[in-house]
Length: 199
Image 1 (cartoon, rainbow, N blue to C red):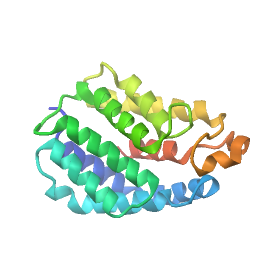
Image 2: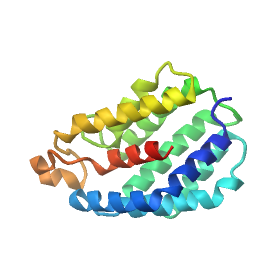
Image 3: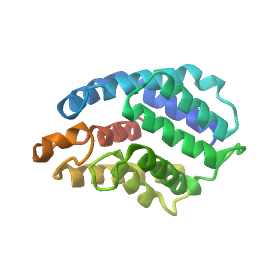
């Protein structure tokens, strides 16, 4: 069994179950570097996705599109917009498929990454969630089992967090703090870590 709409439902429900506690952590982190609304984005977005999870169609592409619409409907933040864009990118790659081989996961992450780069203007090395996604994409290449993919993604994101903690943020509001951001975690990368943990 590959990636299906049921897989997406499972992910949404697992993440939304812990999203309130995660949201508080992310609001605190984001308050030091940005608008302080990343946690609110996660809480509102995942709660809204949960409300439509059982209505998502079996077409994986359409299900991803529905999840994207649910996220962006309640979030005007940059992170919420980028999550919506990532889901739309995956939707385009999985349209009219009811099951997507797990071996395609790295390619789907690549599609999401490129779409987010194009829309957000960040690049690899800027200390953003894009650096998490690149680490995850690379680690998942060639893997075909969901448990292996999840463990590889967790390990890769943890390594990326550790690597970039000692680097400055180079984009967004956080960049104005310059070297003061050295030693601090990027909130978007932490959000990715919390989503992977919930899964």
